[in-house]
Image (tube, helix red, strand yellow):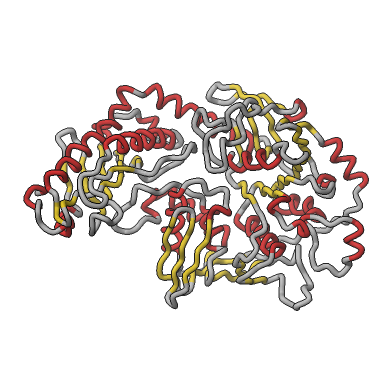
Length: 552
């Protein structure tokens, strides 16, 4: 077929769509997306390998072990497609590849196991070859027969040659999952294992910093945990409640907070963060000057604005630092945050705390600080708070747990926190949970796409809006941004308004039940998607112009 097409116009490749090619080895090839031009993004190849052919053990095909198995295979797929990649003509001719996986162990669409029949689905990009703007049938044959066979066989050889590596990868993942289950069961907010390497080599690097000080837990917070897998781990476990991390500049406060945020994911061996584990619903909240806010009740933090603007039903297309942060706090509570992270360096400090003198001077200030109601917030919502603070002792005085970072080593400062509480003059106030909201779609949205770590939304009246997801540290791979873009596109029109907490749950259940097909285009599943939590889809919806939220 390919040789007959050779020399014809490039558009002839469209005949490949939907054609199934069964290889003698027992696996099947389909080209699920055909590029229209040699310079266009490459086509998508999908290979389905039945269980009788791949023969991976059944226990690795079921949750939770299927995640580290497919993660391992994605890493093999990345390397083998990169090694086979070549240039054989115009544009993307003979390109092979998938995105480079980060050091987190995550479900990705480039390798999946079909839960219905346990077949393995392998997806990757392939640039259909062009000589000029015509089909190059000879090179296409090499690409779609020889190279596809080589890619598939490389993944199947893992079963014969690398099962020890697979088992180590699975064991490492299971250990982190069991540790997370333990900390939730025992009432802890996060765990940092002794010997962990927290800092990265550079702001743009995922590699651990060479010669960094290994983490050493303070005796007062050290625990020893025997896990069901048989492993014993030691490290710092911090109970739920209010935790303050303090210390001088450049002593590792923010690095520890960033590591706690990273603990929502499981990490590969050698990353340095394999034993840093947090609850899945851990969310960093910060000030975002200029962000969009939709009908959020921020009245517990801000009321009686001089302009007369309502704060129990607050909307803005250009929120200030304090109003944006108040909205983000209550949106996190609404979405089901288990642990809220705060850093005074990225916060609206006037929302965090106020000293006695300023409280007296600004007696008509509309802001009620977080420090004055943080203990009530934790008690009312069950959401723990972990805050980095060193400019004032106000938050320290509210802490259940306090850590003093000194030369990257944490020390127990809980006694000092109690002393600060004894001398504190903070007037505590009660936290009022926000009125719940329901989501009802996005008006006029016609297109959503992902560009690097940005969501670009286009509306029917030519409005174009860009949102950077680098402001959300839970987003760690571009594949997550692409999945969010697909999800927003599908959720732009909903039949009935959905309460926000239910929307988060519905997104997660859809991904659990249907995999990436839940939000991928109807025609095909691309190979460049990475699993994301419903919390992060809602994070984007909260910031999109013309998203419709109504208080209920």
